[in-house]
Length: 407
Image 1: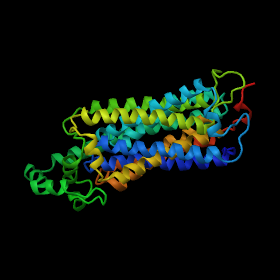
Image 2: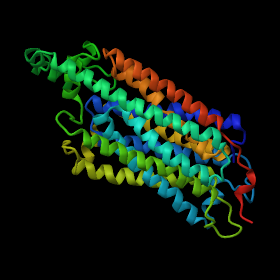
Image 3: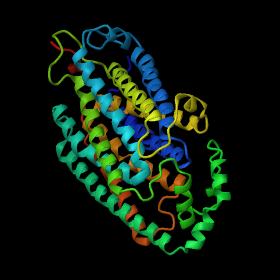
Image 4: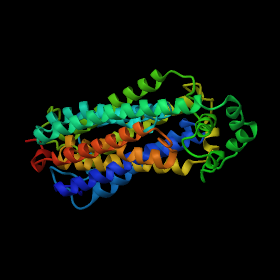
């Protein structure tokens, strides 16, 4: 079994996880904006997300010979470690619910702001819990100022969203009603319906991002219609996702380190790979059950679908499968680094809005043609996130390997 044991290796895992976990939401957002039903996308995503856990368990979890206190993945499956297994599966349940909520929140609140709010809740609640669960192995004088930096970035992110929303409202108000009708002509709607999701071609490709026409066409072709709906829906989904995200890492921490001493004497703690396997099973089951239900009983006025329609919907499937793989590998890397350097420090990956904001600007034209005030706020938010991730990584401690077996 391969374990990350150095601080440098843990930080490398954090950086990779940061990139992967900041990228997969952008792929789901891209597909929703191009008209693919979120139920179809999430079913595809769930398959490769679970596959990533299997891949990690059967590779890293089986490298070399196991030890009595550090058994390999397959050997540990037969051991009586169900209390820890239940903690791991509980973490998978809340992560699945959080990911599902955030997928719908992206449409209402936007990719960047959804990620900022959920990340902040995760850091404030989850990182604090992990600090005490890890027996304070992280440097508190560094860790909690990092948490404070996240909070400042959250307020800046909220200001960015408010300013950008005002900019968009002004663009639409300054647009003549005649031009609005022309921008969404029946001919253009036909082009949108016949677009190729794999290549990303649509009528919007010929419209400059950030313009009123762009905003109108986006609403016309996207799967989740948000125009006229209360912003409270999006905020409720976002805060629900954040609360779920704040609990999955502490649950995984309890699963691998047994701080509450629920295992019998002589039973080794779950390795990170075994815990990740059980974690991913529950995450997968919840996602499949809920999304199959949503096919036939959709939420938020989405059209009904079916398993047959899902199987036939291959447009954009490769992107959804890639998103699941990125998320699964990213979660695995986060847990591997947390086991080595402390889960509180590994929560530095919650700076993923840095990556998501980059993709939001590049892929979706967020903040294009916005006001100077919006750009200043955006730059300030990104700077504070850079400071936050650096401070959290600097707080990394080193977990003693002696914790892995009970006396």
